[in-house]
Amino acid sequence: MGIPLASESRLASLEKRTPTIATLCSHSSLQIFHGARAVGFPTLGISVGPPPKFYDAFPLARPDRFLSVPRAKDLPSAAEKLRAEGAIVIPHGSFVEYVGAQTFADLDVPVFGNRAVLAWESDREKEREWLESAGVLMPRRYENPSEVDGPVIVKYYGAKGGKGFFLAKNREALEGFTPSGPHVIQEYVLGTRYYMHFFYSPLSDRGYRVGHGSLELLGMDRRDEANIDELYKLGAEEELLKAGIRPTFVVTGNVPVILRESLLPSAFDVAARIVERSIELFGGMVGPFCVEGIMTERLEFKVFEVSTRIVAGTNLFISGSPYSDLLEPGLSTGKRIAQEIERGRSEHRLAEILS
Ligand code: ATP
Image (tube, rainbow, N blue to C red; front, side, top):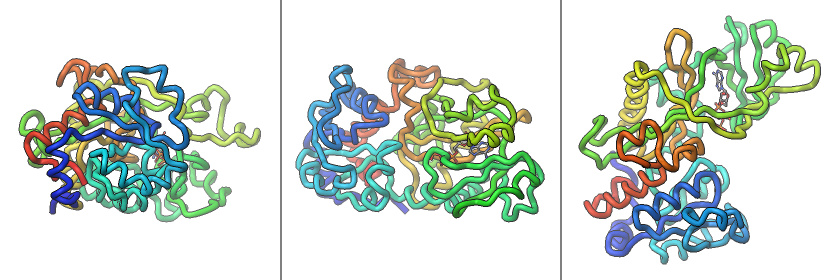
């Protein structure tokens, strides 16, 4: 099973002309434009309303041109213009959320990566099926509150940034809680969070081989999550709840981290399993993805989520990271995406990386 193709004539035309790298003006767009420019591509910023002024403050990352749409959901109305520009759209972490999953799936413009991944990552059940069948360790899921035998996190479906997640330190604490919608009860994993930025290249034939391509580690971060990261300073959770304060996991920023070198083999093993299974299930992920999990004191890495696009934590490493510098000094994920597109063009293999 290959990735669903953008039409062959369209791909052929992207080989003849220099394509334009386009993305929505948000999230990691500065990095994407900066990286595309470094590889020699023209850039186009899709802005909701007038172009944001903050780009003027970053001349090396400002897109060459802008295309404005009234709302992100109106992107299909700009599809013809984007095709006329020879655009390749780079979806980032907020892209699908802003544009809408169905609109993104149907967008009639070549997109970097395999859109079929959407069905597997946006549904928590399917994501678990993918990861568990890959042999990846995940936080335990409780079907029934009576099975709970330790701290748990109650997650609502479709919650953005962990909004409304409930933490209970034991079964008794959970009994007093009435969930307000569809949810899952998951083991609350005690440990250290790592968000690992990987890149899977189906085109590469050297390095850490996985499938017929190779796996690269470009960086690693931890997210600052308001107000959960500061919770310990205020005391026990019951006291907080009495005060009407609910922990939230809304991301407010990112900090760089590195992993003990002795843990790198297991990090690569987990990411490789996720890629290999993605190839079997839906033709494979392409490009950047982030493995998000918690390392316990027993040095077990439990994965709670995989983000299958460029994540905002990569913005820390616009001029390289302790990992990407060992592939190429100063390499960002944004630049790596542009390099992959350039390689796909020169080797007539765009069909393997665009959908
Ligand atoms: P996103 O906005 O990233 O899509 P989400 O709503 O899908 O978030 P998750 O990414 O699953 O939610 O979790 C949000 C945060 O909750 C994580 O960054 C982490 O801090 C915490 N978390 C999630 N699952 C667990 C767990 N099993 N044990 C401990 N903490 C967890």
